[in-house]
Image (tube, rainbow, N blue to C red; front, side, top):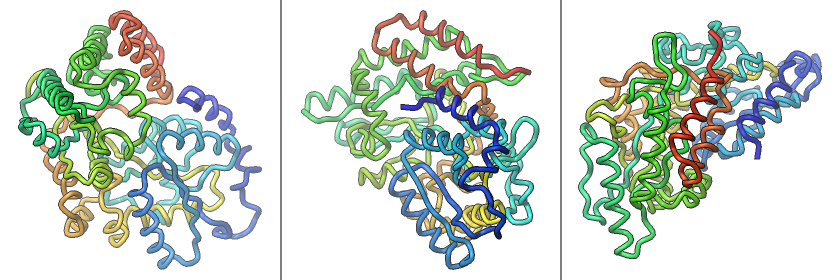
Length: 435
């Protein structure tokens, strides 16, 4: 499988964008723009695919002169394919982009400066605090944020009720409280002969470590006025994840790894076999649909009660390839997907709570009770969110793979957490961007 590290190698191979663009399949042959379909590529499950296809039907009715060729895949295969396509000069015209990769692609001039197509793609009504998350360090706008995503706890209230466990008070709960509740549910399931756990997996994801760092007053990639995560903080995180295994709050490490790779809709949480799951909050809609349960959202537990350090994150971006032979048509498509009220009513908030405030009010009547869970959660959190972390720099794209590999060694008990923490910090330090 291609990892973030090998993705970087492919991106480096794609670094000579002008040369690739001049000979790749997307290159213009001198004809008018729009002669070939605009290729649109995204990651996601069946729910997202259905919504997107419906919105594209509307686009086809409004823009009959622009044909769109849609493509999508699961997250696990998305970046492998995208890196290969860029390296071969065959990139999609429009693609979903994630904050972990936007600096890597953008810094290699692989993404179009969206302000060069501002006559077609109008982002003027978007709050600058959100829009600027799509800019490179030099100010170039390479991603149009689709909306807000907040890292939170998904909870299955049906399983809590079956286990006789009350809904946690998430304004005060701590990670210790969370472990105790998850263990209680796992213990109930074992006695009842149910294939259920309290919590599906924890300890190998950078979003988890990033939240732990923020609650410790630190960051993975700090600004000049912030502090790099310490070895002690990493050690406490690894010790906590291992303690979850020992208590039975989560499955054995091998089962956790298998479940994490199963995908959003096939994993334990999506099939009513885990009471809790950490997620970006708009994913709750996919879990609601796949499980048939009225999933809810809670604040992250805190290291110190009440100090959750919740943050807004650009849920994802639309970016346009610098290789595209038809940037105006691509920009017309992005503008439609972001700003058309009828498209917004179809797409709703599955990709994030829209970054255009007027559309939030416009789509609210179209949302069902499950969908309003995401919108209400995002609105409620705005009163307490803190300064978001830096977008992952290009130098740090491989950290997710390196951290996951090393954290697994601690999780499986093959190396002491403190020893692993020292190596993780060494790797992270080497990936800090030059200032």
